[in-house]
Length: 429
Ligand SMILES: Cc1cc2nc3c(=O)[nH]c(=O)nc-3n(C[C@H](O)[C@H](O)[C@H](O)COP(=O)(O)OP(=O)(O)OC[C@H]3O[C@@H](n4cnc5c(N)ncnc54)[C@H](O)[C@@H]3O)c2cc1C
Image (cartoon, rainbow, N blue to C red; front, top):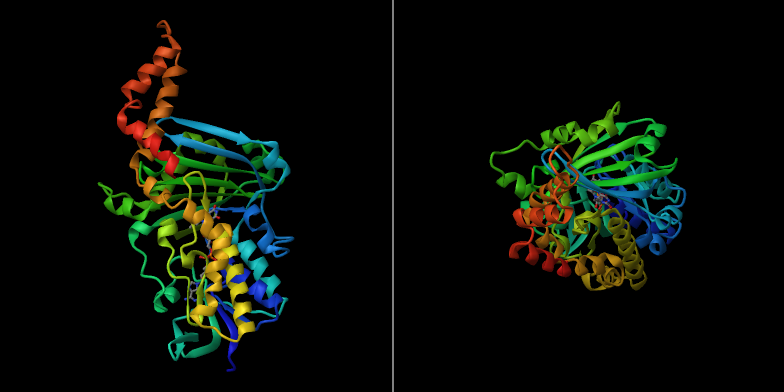
């Protein structure tokens, strides 16, 4: 087989975005994917932020099958038997689509069809086993007895990235550096979603949960409204699960979450359509490995480009942006007629100019801050308890509100040095 310009391993958002730009510049590209079709193996919570990638992506996502424009943000602190929620909406979010809910089985498949019309081969059910090497440089891929030689391989094979490991660009992931996510897609009629989440047709809600949802372990719950389905799931730190005594069964957490009073009404009548589980990189900037070598680039989750900011999880726009930056570097390398690490390193320089490495570097203290288990146990219990006391009226005379608040803060330890230091540390994240 003649050498292709590029072989991309993985038809997720990183791989497909890379292929889209390369095809626009006339390069010969093959994308290989182990799943039955692009999107079949890809799991996300489900919100894609469009603003960060607007300029980079150009017309790539025009007409994409987004589910709903997110106009309502909710966060809930879940205590053992109570909860406290914040609900935010604004004209800014309603008028200016800044993020959308998505289902990957639809979005990735749509993008894959779009790039195939540009002459790119997307080959499903094709699991890459190894890399081909030539004079110390990656020179293609191997799948069983088949080989596809190429000037450049782009490893977009997701969080575990055996390709990046085989190229010596990153070590195997440690349990501390990742979390596991479990997700259900539940069918619910469009009008019921509109009513239950107080949104208009086409508008959606993103809802995050902390506390009892993970039984106090690192992680949280998420709910995103799609057109006529709901994406509901839990993310839990793998280390936290391993250290937990007594041990707890991860899938059972999702069942317990759904049985909570807060969830029963909004999920009433919803039917399970899909179940999936997936690993998420959680190390932030510290988890970013080497991004290129001779004849190889790494993009998306494979490179560690995902950011858990506590208030939201971002990975998809990092996958899109890094796939595009990888394509730009390959186009330059082709012009220069060289695919060495040094030529391909323009990828890293480009990433540094974008939000990908800027945001990851700016928030490099976040994973350390999120190691504080109080965020998942103490606070989600303390605030709902305080509100419960404040809002309780019975036959006894009501105490002064100020006294209830003050006593509540004092007895819960909220005014202790430990808590004040935690508050002070917020400025560093
Ligand atoms: C539960 C959960 C919730 C999340 N929530 C959000 C969210 O709300 N917003 C957000 O922006 N991000 C979220 N993320 C993160 C986001 O989903 C990822 O960052 C994003 O999917 C990464 O895209 P990718 O293309 O790099 O990798 P992937 O989508 O994982 O694609 C990798 C592809 O490579 C293929 N592959 C792997 N190995 C091989 C091989 N050897 N041969 C051939 N093909 C191979 C896989 O089948 C897969 O299709 C979430 C993640 C999870 C798990």
